[in-house]
Image 1 (spheres, rainbow, N blue to C red):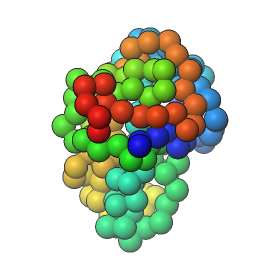
Image 2 (cartoon, rainbow, N blue to C red; image 1 turned 180 degrees about the horizontal axis):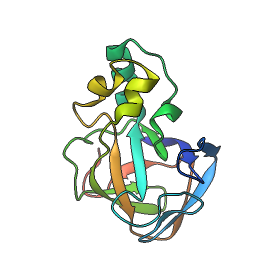
Image 3 (cartoon, rainbow, N blue to C red; image 1 turned 90 degrees about the vertical axis):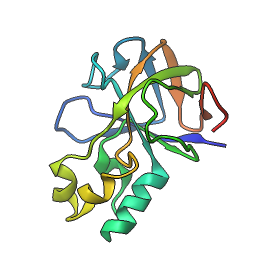
Length: 148
């Protein structure tokens, strides 16, 4: 079963991420306490397995916090080309708006990491929050339209 393994908030853009055990999604705004509010990138989701595969390809061993995604999940498949699908994490629902494209900061973290993340949506997902709900580490994760 897929599950939420980490929640990371960035209270201020460019500042260190803060790991929390629980957070609240706010419909059409994103995560309470996070700098990214509104727009198509309200919440970012990263599959731990994709992060580990990109690290292995680049010869790195970096913590997922380096990616600066809000929600880190494990066991979820079908991320690539998932635009407009709805992801259920605990009581919340997120609509996928696209791929989180890796930026130059990934190569600053480790040479070759950006290229390793460029295939198969390894950079994760950008999403909008559909409902007000709490999410917590350990919550189950699934696609609303499938059992992936």
